[in-house]
Length: 198
Image (tube, rainbow, N blue to C red; front, side):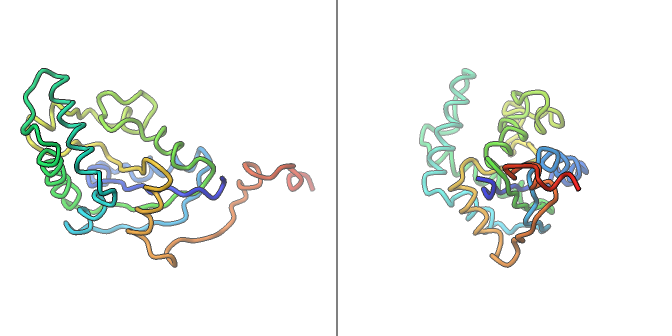
């Protein structure tokens, strides 16, 4: 379990708000190890590949978006989940290619779940205080839907181990991921703390 990896992107709004260090600090403080890191401006094609790695993503995000409109008593732009999903993808492509992003691979026990907990829910408005999105963003679906843009929520984090593996393989070449030991690994994972006392 200590070798579980997850994938994180600090999105363009996170870069523009100078929150790279804050994000990295939160993951490091809990004991995760950074094993891959790079910065780039994604292409539209790369963003589309990323969001459609799961062939069901368009339908799922479309259904979720339609449910969101209905729960607020609003009429969705379309009753067809694929049409709505494509609208979501279009605004994401514009958002994710608007500037540089930081792409990271983190490793550690329960990495996927831990990162998701630290990041918070997709909508900053409903994210808990203490999460990255809850502490640093005031955006909501209502605001983003009103002006027709993607929600500005600072970070993408993989939702499952399978998703993480697929995203890591898309964004990183194998040689870009490092295998090394941190001193803290002994504190977190060694059965006996034999190496503490001299």
